[in-house]
Figure 1 (spheres, rainbow, N blue to C red):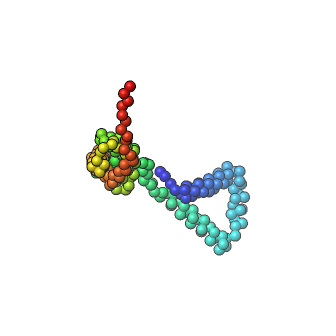
Figure 2 (cartoon, one colour):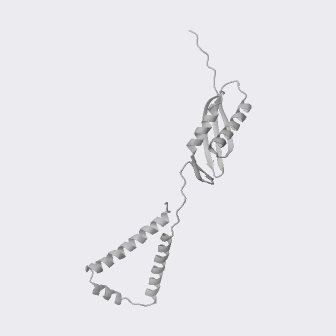
Figure 3 (cartoon, rainbow, N blue to C red):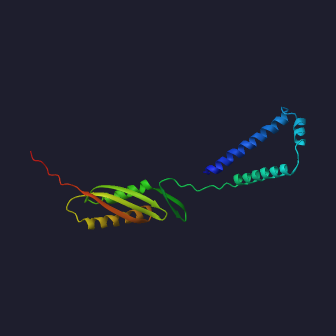
Length: 183
């Protein structure tokens, strides 16, 4: 259970006050503080409007704090870097790394791609994919880019069941032809 910093501070103060009151009552019970002295101290308190108001406010704050801590809500925690999909049988969590691996596999199936770097960004209703690629020379860039976009979208959606909202392709460079040296 994850609680906020305010709830944590409230819990610390509340626990400290309860522990202090418990120690005083235990000291009275074992005789460290004589019972007669405690009764005498309580009898010497002036029971006027100021005391009544202070007693009411402290008691009310204590009651509210008790109720707040009693009914602390358990917050849903999602694992960082995961995407959640609900089915009728339960929840499915797929990590962003898994989706990135699927994207890489789909792109590496193209012989025209020399190198690829990918970034998968999770959104509430799907993912966006960004591809930085280096292509082989003499390829039709618009044609291969559209084919890669289509393949990535279909592969990720069919394999992981996660909706791919966008596949952004950036052609970083073309690979240089390396000629073989004859010796």
